[in-house]
Length: 171
Image (cartoon, rainbow, N blue to C red):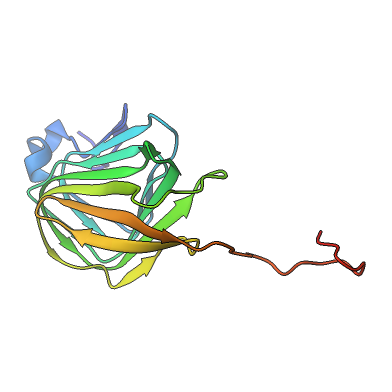
């Protein structure tokens, strides 16, 4: 058997050389990304994240007894029914950064809710939240799910300064 840990068919972490996933540990210092709709990645190992785990808009499943994150969890939201998720079967120790981006031209409605992280249990909290500025957010650390809810919409959000010299022109 090789000492390399390889992913295959959307699975990371299974190595019969080491007796299966219970004996494999994955330390992510780069990027693990499910970046297509319907795309799924499963990590079958003890998992620690100091890099980026991206669910844009796919699903990342971490089947581990304990997961630690001091890196970034990144989520893409396409619409109220299509958004990235991270599912963790065991306990997760939250920390680091939560990033959320709109995909396409989605404009949320008040009371839209997004269950981004499902877990067996959790401790800690994200130290940084980078959320789209066009909405006001309620952050919910639930018993088994971390979610965001839109509580209000900012009526006008100009992301770049208008250009043009003609009176009334915005380009």
